[in-house]
Length: 412
Image 1 (cartoon, rainbow, N blue to C red):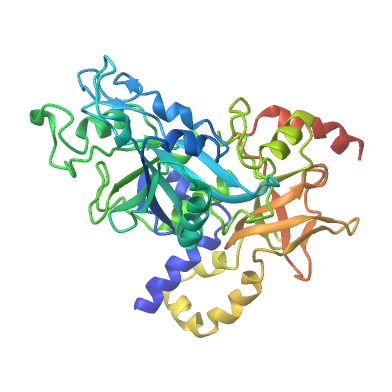
Image 2 (spheres, helix red, strand yellow; image 1 turned 180 degrees about the horizontal axis):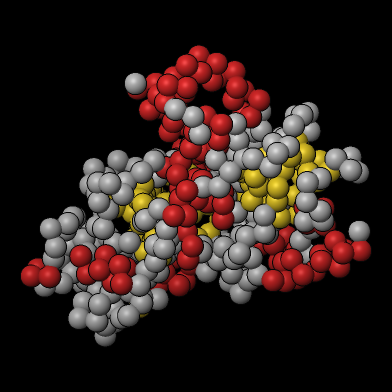
């Protein structure tokens, strides 16, 4: 029976449309992410000259209020930032979610801890953690910044799905809190660690939900046992929104951040000043033309169905059990749609782009805009018969990203 359970769980990733849209809020620990800490008086200055966003905002605390915590909480918080570290040539290396811990000891009149105690935590890609630490320390030089691996002490979490938002529930999450930042009579049973961590809005897009760093081996506030899910569900959620994350999904050393929509994901400040790789980003931005972008994809068969799994899921459990021995053979063809697969226009024979991420019938691809949305049913995977590719325009895209190519599409 365990074979059946695992197979059914696997099959859900191959449905034409994700059922996550209809699900309630879910949460998962992000095992592909890890945590590092920057500590020292030069922390802000060090990061400001290194990453693509304006890190000085982390040194500008917001008093508690309607957008952060309930009004009688004396916590001073700073919204997290999303940013990237680039090569000197302006190509992507690593992404960072940067957090400044809540400070209950920071007074609203500006008095508080010694600036030498300044700490910034970063949620980073676990698969390249050692490489990130080595690269950051290379840039340290004489800066008064200590960079530490905090993977054992903290974990990264995401809360997403359904109509998840940061209105009433966000206020509740902060009021539940993680520590002694307010009157203990207001602390619920889900009180965790006295470091003060809480959920924050994902700094990229509202539709991605909430993100946070929490002490390891604990469950964050507002996460019930039946809400906790696998990280693959969040990957599927991101694929449908057209958002890549980490060095496995964004080409390290080669990817151009603007093509991966970093400007729309609030990862780039064009007023920040100099940082590593800034020249290419500024030049491309001011030129105003991005010919390729990361786009959500669906892989369909000739009938327009998303997967072979629909046939399975329409039949009885017995049918699935009978077919399990042949299951791996049946999915082999679909699994060939993998990162690096070439997307072609079957009419012109031209290459339109490349698949960057794939999970079942969903994926992401870096495609030429003038070809990606020109016509339906003409995109295919090179070398794979019977699979066509549907490109989807995300709802969150600014209109100017798309309008500039409509004339080209209509004239074709």
